[in-house]
Amino acid sequence: MLGERGQGAVEYLLMVAVALVIVAVAVFYLMKTKGLGGRTINKKTNEIEEALNNAEGP
Image 1 (cartoon, one colour):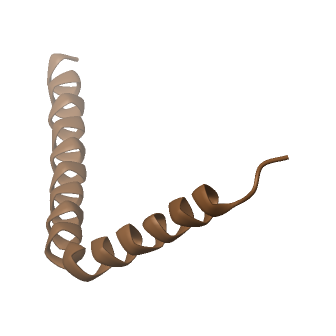
Image 2: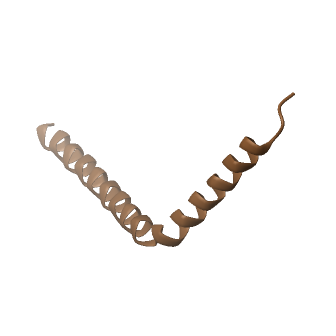
């Protein structure tokens, strides 16, 4: 019984490790490509903020 329980724990740890690797790769990719995407999002956010500031109230 103890061997099966230990095997389950090892399998669980391996699944967690694989998930962490996938997240790390995704974060690395997003940080690498953030330059263009981050600027575009920032520009659009500023445009929306400016439009809201220029909008007339009720």
